[in-house]
Amino acid sequence: MEVLADVQNTILLKVESYKTETLNTRENFGSKVGAVLAAAGSAVGLGNVWRFPIETGRNGGAAFILVYIACIIVIGLPVMMSEFLIGRSTQSNTARAYQKLAPGTPWRWVGRLGVFTAFFIMCYYGVIAGWTIGYAVLAVGNQFAGKTAADYGPMFSDYATNWWQPLLCMVAFVVLTHVVIVKGVTKGIERWSKVLMPMLFILVLVLVFCSVTLPNAGAGIDFLLKPDWSKVDGSVVLSAMGQAFFSLSLGMGCLCTYASYFDKKTSHGKTAIQVCVIDTLIALMAGFIIFPAVSSVGYSLDPKDVGANLIFITLPNVFQQAFSGVPWLAYIFSVMFYLLIIVAALTSTISLHEVVTSYMAEEFNMPRKKAALWETGGIIFFGIFCSLSFGVLDGVRIFGLNIFDFFDWTASKICLPVGGLFISLFTGWYLDKKLFKDEITNYGSSRAPYVKALIFVLRYVAPIAIFTILLNELGVLSLLGS
Ligand code: PHE
Image (cartoon, rainbow, N blue to C red):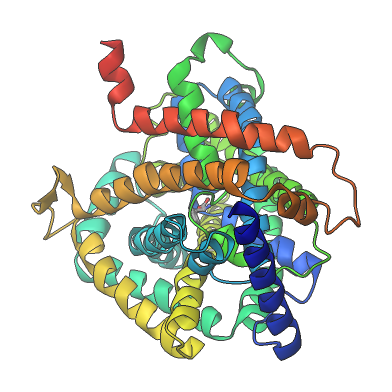
């Protein structure tokens, strides 16, 4: 029976790839650079510029960074390669990919979960991304100048609780994403990634340079470079793993969808390494923008100062104070910083949007434009509730959380780890190992001596690690510990 199912699978895959090759119904990324930049664009986002510095601050600086890098190498890379090979071998949206590789089995729900997660993340991610547009507008209007440290907190809460401004910015962000998506894979996603990613890199480099050359930047630099191992415990390791998943866009089909546009020559191993390196570099550089600037104005690097409102409350003040002698530099630094976050977030929202758009277009046989329109409408609809939950809808609670936190919690704390867990189990245990090896070696054209180690990690290490994160998120570990 099993042999029959294998043969049936192989035939199905061959027929599909024949169809895509001859009928050319599906677009591919036009170049390897385009593919890498698009995938790196998905990975680099608010997770690098906003979440990474917060997590680093909370978990003790340099030691956290080293644990984080270890998590990326041991778990992030293998799971990323799994998503790549699932996507490219099936050349379809993430839901259909599992259907093709495991017809008639419940594995198809892993793909569907990915589509659902992408939609869910997009609804609340768009709100924060929208705030960055709002703050960029404030920066351009020089609204941060002449304020004292105490003014920035109320300024932010006025902004976030105001009902129409954040809403408008969220809609603007989602529409911006929509415009790129309707252009298609090559002319939209790839072209924009090729423009936005280098732009992001230049912005980051300039800002790092300005920040590390500030007077008294040393304490911030030390914080990032001198590990204090006494701070590392189990919860730090789990935070590092959670951050690695979020930052690399793992566990929900974004990378699987992008890999379905990879051509046959793209190497999964090389691409995954390049994406991980770019993502980690940008996160580190965001740290080198933020911590030296914070220490240069004499703030402690205490978790409360680098808390969740870091980029909207602490930083505008830091920029003004750090460059107080040269107001035009403070102005440029602020504008560039918010522009940088917009660019980073945009390349991520594009990838989230694409997961659902390609799913709807291919599964419901819709023109791409129409699928994208439905998706954009849905995001804006739910995004409105997420946005208003900071103001008028604050009282509405779902399982004790406000609407925004409920979306965030469900997607990033539950759906991403569950998705990641099943992806590693799927490739580690279920997937035909010949197909696995063929994909990793590009059908024999390159060598991959690490295949066995990869399978070992996907079978045992990644599932156990991810399952532990999940238990931790659900509070089961602390219950056991108490
Ligand atoms: N990786 C993105 C970031 O760092 C967030 C993201 C998560 C994007 C999951 C897509 C999927 O901001």
